[in-house]
Length: 360
Image 1 (cartoon, rainbow, N blue to C red):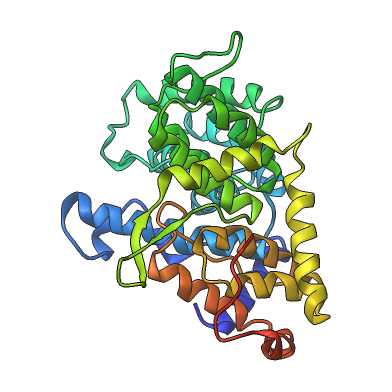
Image 2: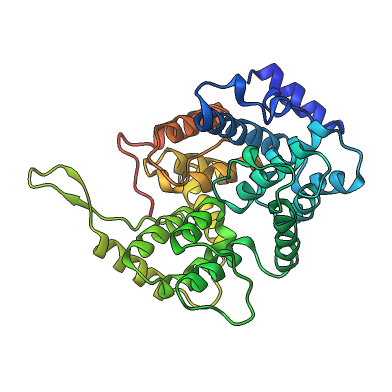
């Protein structure tokens, strides 16, 4: 999207009118995308999630405002679809009542957008709702489930709900707790997709309850992401270079020690703010400089937290592949973010060595 288009979108949003992107207008018609059959539908949904979600999250309005506009009942069909598909990127439970209502909509297209957007909001891959017939009982079943989930989410964060769901899948259910029926692996993947520093305490509490080494390694990456810590140990090859093998046991022991050193409630938001401030102080560039310096560190697991923090300084929202941090598109997205702060980046340049320091 060009600079003029971005400005027009922002003006429309803040002026009270919700923009409707071409991909939204065309939904659920996948004929405009390459591929055939399910692959073509997947290409359509991937573009909508990446582009529409990022633009909605950057330009506003926020999730509470989107929910209020839905409740007011004065939206066109395209605007409803834009909210359901683009607003999911906030991962905010305040929007769940809108999804419950949309799943009962008289418009089949709106119901389809609601089911897809709901899964994105929860941090899950979306089903191909375009194949569900209009008279399927799935719509009403999903609406009832979302209504219950919305009630639970008033008391528990979405990440906490996923933690409860993981423990239930592992045979360690918490009495009286709502749980989604998923595998442990699915729960941990959803947590990775939506977790923020505010969820660090819940992740620290979950760590000693994980039932397998594979699950511990999975959650380790999420804890790294939201705490700006680096736990992974990389093995050296016999030739002296850095090899691809990861020392799982050594890395997990480092997390064990770090988690064991936490006393009481873990304030993840304060932790990462302090980290950015400390890094920025080294170059006298403030917290913004700290975040930009961390963004340059060649450790992709921490980039989603950095990208979210830079939104407060006017950076655009970007889509990052949280499940595969080493995705080359993540590095390109971070480069584009840094380009929005040329003055601060110039001030930081003399402080950088040829090899950035590791996140600690």
